[in-house]
Length: 270
Image 1 (cartoon, one colour):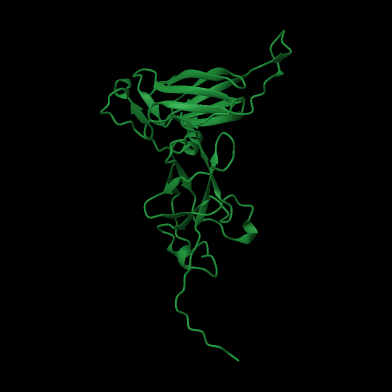
Image 2 (cartoon, helix red, strand yellow):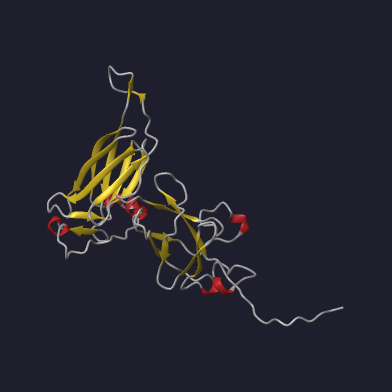
């Protein structure tokens, strides 16, 4: 016997991509709710703490095609989608992230970095008010222009040991940055003459700043009650990729487990 059913309503939904926000110091997923968005983009936070994009301007083909993914030549060409990520509690610094679209949905391409079912990881950097672990090596930094003394917001700081990047962070609108370097050993073998072991490691701090996207705050305005502190939205991934063509400086430091240091970093801006 055949039963005829009347369709009253159909609810269809398409997942365009998903973001997973990661604590840059620990590598753990950020548990608290963040604000993720861009003009015309609909974002939902699911039960796994992922930020799922369900509507993106320019991807109408992908949103309406459910049985099969649109062929590559039918996919609408899009520039990378620029999203802003903000922590309402200010424990993490706001940042921009560029998301390549459309994502690859072919199951045979599951190893691709842009596979639809693999969330795009976004590193979130701690603000100066974030809580620290007692065994971390912590640097509290002030970032400024060497000539004008303006405080620089949205500057990228890399802690490097040779070709290895130990940690990264960004500066806020006041030019303050908190660089957390977990995993520094309490003691390690020494390369210095006369010492078998040492309680520190030597690293280089590379400061990178893009004047076109970062912010500048004159030191006199920092104490002015009427002056609004700028809030930089930069993409640290792009800053690192472009660092060879941007103003930068290098400072050598000694890092020790459980130690907090305060340093000033500066560079010459054009």
